[in-house]
Image (cartoon, rainbow, N blue to C red; front, top):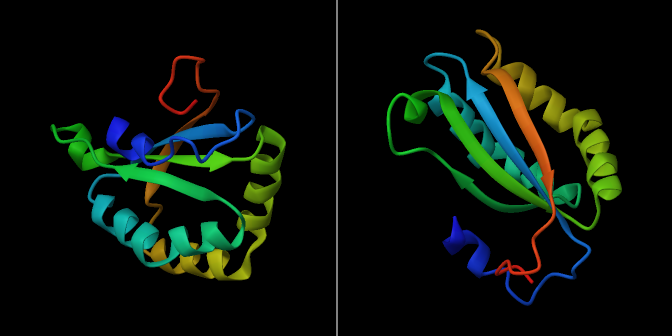
Length: 124
């Protein structure tokens, strides 16, 4: 994960917050979820001031088949919550989500953590 964070050094104010999201994906849906992110979600995030730090797939099974991980950067937790609300209400996102889930939900559940970098983090 440090490779993705290394490019951030010096570009952040100490007030930024990071959001770690772990998507527990339904069986057989991981490639569809990755395609949705690559083809649509990331671009919609950008429109709503949601900066993607990076996206990861575990190397080892079984997590490689059912876990998708990413980190977003927000100016503050409050801004992050506001941007998520705008993203969820975006008509393009609603259409993309509905179309991608025509044959069932892609994600079973999401673990979400807002994080502050420590004073010894490479992000400071």
